Amino acid sequence: MSRFRRGGMTGDPRAGFRHEGDKEPAVPQGLIKAARKSGQLNLAGRGLSEVPASVWRINLDTPEEAHSNVQFSTSDRWWEQTDLVKLFLSSNKLQSLPDDIKLLPALVVLDVHDNLLSELPGAIGELVNLQKLNISHNKLKTLPQELAQLQNLKSLLIQHNQLEEVPDVLGQLGDLEELDLSNNSLTNISSCIGGLVHLGRLNLSKNKLKVLPAEISCLKSLRQLDCASNMLEDVPTSLAGMDCLEQLYLGQNKLTYLPEFPNCKHLKELHVGNNQIHTLNPQHLSHLSSLSILELRDNKLKSLPEEIALLKGLERLDLSNNDLGGLPNSLPNLPNLKSLQLEGNPLRSIRRDVLSKGTQELLNYLRGRIQVPDPKPGEGEAVTAMTMPSDAPVNTHAIATLKTLEYSDKQASVISDAVFSAIGSSHVTSVNFSKNQLIEVPSRIVELKDSVCDVNLGFNKIPTISLNLCLLTKLTHLDMRNNLLVSLPDELEALTRLQSIILSFNRFKTFPDVLYRIPTLETILISTNQIGSIDPLQLLKLSKLSTLDLQNNDLLQIPPALGNCESLRSLNLEGNPFRNPRAAILAKGTAAVLEYLRSRIPA
Image (cartoon, rainbow, N blue to C red):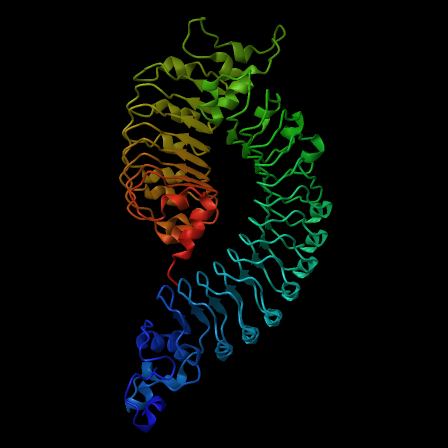
């Protein structure tokens, strides 16, 4: 007989822990039973205002079935139960946690995010095996000193609370690898943070910080530092010594200059948009050779130095909404630049229609403005051998100097042999056949397979991609927007260098499976189609994917697992018929959408 029924008690066996009149949602015994076997218990989203005592005592009390079953199958050996190691209590109505939490000393993961907690019990310090603690989205104003006893803690998530200071106790968590303090009311960071020598990710965004402590430079393992949306007017010079730093977010502060980072040799992303930076000096750029993303939008820059060309690895440069009146001649020489944003600048020398045509055409335009000296007598014979009459449709100068085969906006239904013949012996890297009436990919394009990296066939009437295109194994950028495509061939998988593909305004009803198998992809633009679903588990394989545009499709739901695609920096979902995430969340941007989706992932 269960010990809760001794003395003739025949009522609810949990009556000793709550009043009979309460309408507290019950925890199914089947969940408790399964948790004894698996070591995991998920009670998220059950409307609980308190946790039944049977949960805290799950490792101590003899299961009720042990008193009623005299025969046990192999699966019912309750005496072989597993200690509870993972407990999920998120999205309930909990206002406090009892000291009985100490009865679960084997816990490795405790998730109580999205509740009404205003404090934590000191007994939490007895969970000495805890490695991940998620107490985000509560009403915490302080943290208990006993937190220092959690010496195995690796992940501590405290975002969206009401903390006004970082308690010194956090500095004693020497094994901590991830700390999120974003969306609190912090006005300063204690120097104790320098003790977190194994910290790899630190999020301090959306607080009220005016300064950062010099001790932050002690975080020699830090790879990602997010201090966006604060009140910083400066950053400590010691920050320059964080030689493992890969991502630095300083946007939406009050910085007036770009800090120098002489020792940050591994810095790949620098986000300093929405500040008051008015000058970019050569010394700011000389040490950033590994930088792939530089975001300087919404500042007060009036010019860029020619030394911008030192950033050989730069792939994305956002200069939107500054005061730039011109651009350095060296800008189009950046060999890996794929995205250049210049909107909102008073650029007098570049036509508005050029700015709207995209990065590649903009770079081609800028290269075309660079003065090319006339060849001396006897030189340049290979370049001029294919010179055509002045009314010829092909720009042979572009072929020779820009390595670009340009035959766009001609309303042509086929690309004639004369166009390809104009190439001669030139080494063409870019092809633009957009804005014609093509109904198929020109077959002779395969002749460029040893050199072409960028192909634009947008604004045509092409219903299928031919296998000839799949033989362009050096292709890095493919633009097929505004065609009649309904599918992509599996052979596209052979494009092992493809980094960006534009498929917007076609007729896809399903997300092309072959894209999941091209791991080099960084940008997929497939808006304004009829796509009904996506597979987030397949998308996770695209570890380099940073931009995904799915606007104006037929997505009825967004799978929560999409939130795990943490490489995404730009996710566009507007214009789909799904109900969640709601428009208010979408308006907050990609990071907020991903966080929302992760919060809805079942444990």
